[in-house]
Image (cartoon, rainbow, N blue to C red; front, side):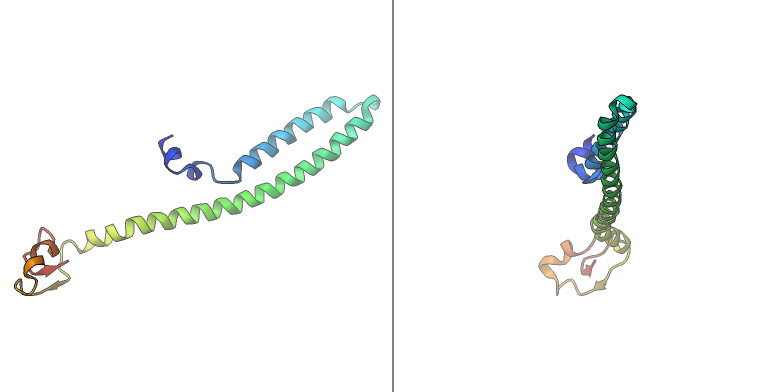
Length: 125
């Protein structure tokens, strides 16, 4: 629930609602066709059958489009996670060793802030 508030498309990617609506409509049309499939109501049943066939075709197209959108959405989400975690993982991996070491007098005002807590002043990284 909290994740849906932060990033709504992660829970239900765009396009999924239209697939759900079309599936519900197909279900209702099948029920109507089943109820009207008698010789007395042949004309009404055939109209509903044509509409049912067209809606099923729309549903198949929407499912294919939704699968494509979902695939792209998942790919974009993975890239966002990598972009967010990548720099942090690099910092953690470089935490134990200094990138370079200079004389503290060269870096005088910034010698302390540029060094990680485990490093001596004058080291960078």
